[in-house]
Length: 148
Image (tube, rainbow, N blue to C red; front, side):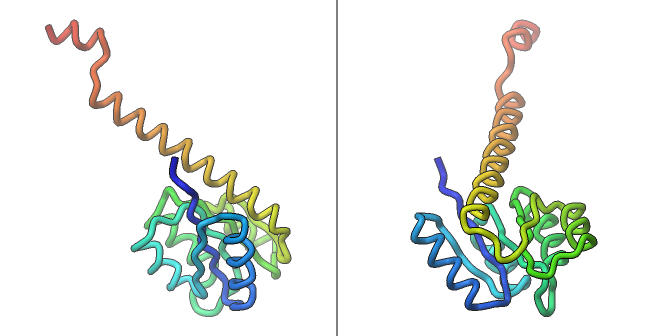
């Protein structure tokens, strides 16, 4: 079974380094990006399952980054994270495909739980895709009889 790879995207370097250290210590595979553009660049060369994404960032903000992630990497799950939450940005993020929305400072265990939930959702979807592909390849007994 594959291991979850998560990426934390935030313009606050101290937050990035602290979260990465804590998650690595707990055994998670973690990469970081300090901007939306950097996150998309990393995702184009690495398989990232779950993105913990800050909403407020200079340049490409979190909601813009989220829309681009969902367009380019539809199976990746995104959890929005902000210290500047407004109801409008939460609704916009959820409408754009975010799986969840957390306020800073978010509890590390809560972030992990949400990331694990997101990864379970991805694995479930990938299994459904695999089964659908197998059904397309493998004929049922009635189809075999009809072809005879």
